[in-house]
Length: 171
Figure 1 (cartoon, rainbow, N blue to C red):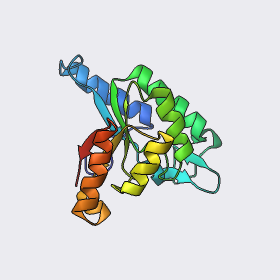
Figure 2 (cartoon, rainbow, N blue to C red):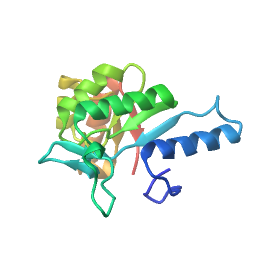
Figure 3 (cartoon, rainbow, N blue to C red):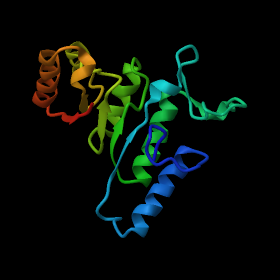
Figure 4 (spheres, rainbow, N blue to C red):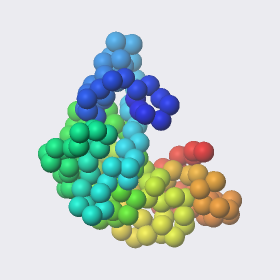
């Protein structure tokens, strides 16, 4: 369920989208066979000035204040998802430079779900090193064309694998 060319039904919020997805999984008879992965792409709705994530950022009338969440509120929001839905993977749950939020989230739930760094890591060995140091995530989205050289992409992948992280290959 998404807005990047995937199935995008008309829903009012993220929870409704996950509910629709769960209903489809259940009706298809695959409830016990399917887990979900999501690319939150939180950098797209993060306001660096207020340090808040605007969950209603597409609203042409503007967002009510209760839809603007700080990192701790987002962690609670995602924890609720993990309790309610079979989420196996959450990609880019925070802004690409919100290292503190990633580290808090990884400490809180990294033992029960994959936390994927795409915008956070950009297949960059220097950013992977920092993520390892601050324990920011537990998986790398590997994009060979993102970093600029095959040798850097291989280095990033090997670093992640050596650390025991998951590595997902993308385009």
